[in-house]
Length: 449
Image (cartoon, rainbow, N blue to C red; front, side, top):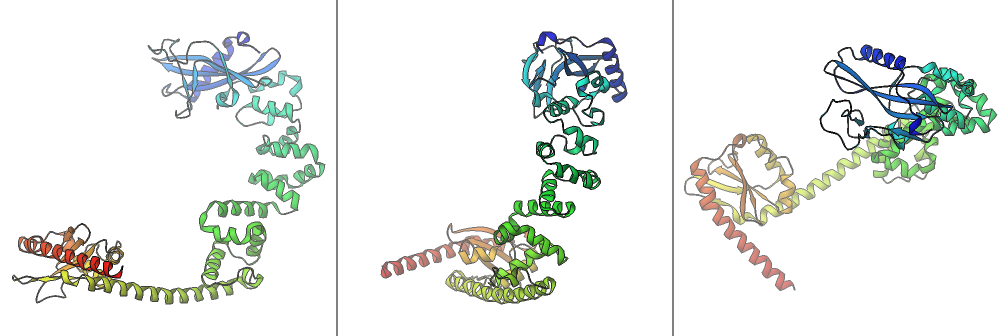
């Protein structure tokens, strides 16, 4: 087939296309619509794609792509493949007088392109035209309900056994090369498909499910469930403890869980608990406990007890570090002559109490961690006779010697008296104390060296 062999749209075909367009798009508004029709060129069955657009009440139609069964390439005209576009393609209408400016891709001539990029979905006007080709008499083309009959007949010419799939009602697999090759080589596989066609056709199983279930003589549903679970856990990093432990024994694990009436997520909880408790998971009784529910509950309880003890020790150590930092910067505390005092926070619990009372976030958002790292320090402004009553909270940076935040109840700003005390009296004093601490630390480092 050559470009010169492509004829214009026959009148009876054009009438059918325009009538179909009126039926599909009665308002005749919106983007370009796509249709196609079958014809014969040089004894080859060909599908010609037609673009339709309505402009000022008139329908316009033009051929934009030609696909043949015997050709690996297609012909394209006045069209550009555009993966960003809504339809995936841009079609030019300059030659028809719909637009003033001519696009770079619309010169009116046919050019060759790869079929897969321009074989997009279209409504086929004359599907029964295939009956004119005797070589496709036994291809079961009448049963084909997918997008492109040309693509199907290409498959048929290479793998005639696709007709067997279609007649079994397994058209879902018509383009699976793996299944088609298996049918051609293995008669037992064909018999297996016949025996299981009802279950396969009603659930559209994966190709790998069919091959795996047949090869290992496993139930199809069980195999599908296994493959879906395997796909899920291998893609989700949260399940890496399971994939590391079982590697090539995942199917054995899933079979075990099925018998135990449990799930892979429950097993993950069990495994994480066992790993935390430092149990040897290479031992069969730990990997596959006889009564999984019982041992799952036991290990989870043991985990919570051990975690609580560890958390308590870790919390105690953190409180100790916090208290140590507070003691280090005690010298920055100050009282004023007007009845206010600035004191440093001594524990994370004090931060939580401050944040709750003043309804801001100092008790949350990691301020205790920043305090221990000495990224910022938290000071409380109090009335001298009410040192336990929250009033104003200050976040101060010992590195930059600046006040980062200073808020009262619900992020309100301090009054002028308190503000003057903080900024004009306490801040210069605090910076002077920080300088003394730094000189002291430098002297200690030199002495140690």
